[in-house]
Length: 217
Image (cartoon, rainbow, N blue to C red):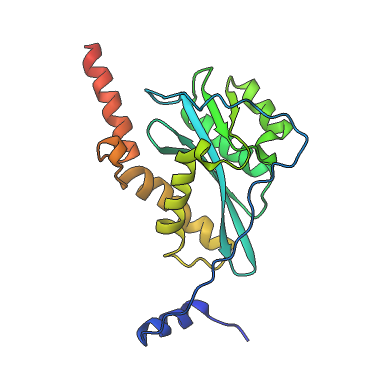
């Protein structure tokens, strides 16, 4: 028998029935490895323009029968998600795909700081090699301290609360189809940030470009 979970939830809402939802949890960070650890270079660094400091993180989306994993790279200055990847597997291929997406879309100058936690996905040889080959400087936070990567953590909370929980994803295909729209159009394009003068990340960056052009003329 095939159970239509969405139909059941719709019927429960129609009859004003509210199920108690127990969120499933899975760990995304494994810092128990013997790979090299970058020093924390981002602790005192305050960017004043794009592509100076990128922060990276991983989260998960619970679906029927398992989890889907999402890796992101965020520009810490504008809070814009500049790269992301979605996969059934949580390994270095996932994080590297997100980083490659960010690099291809932004073409950062040499010296751009890349900050993450100490997870094995970021300490992996293939990931470190890509950083070095493309002029990115690696940085990692302290063990078990989310405050070192607060902007990425803040985005992940927004992603879960506004982009995942309301959608009630059931399959990997659901996530792949709908989550990019939330990231690209809603979060990057329309979500306002008090720290950005109540502009969205895209509008904040566009304003910066306009001001630079004006000042140069």
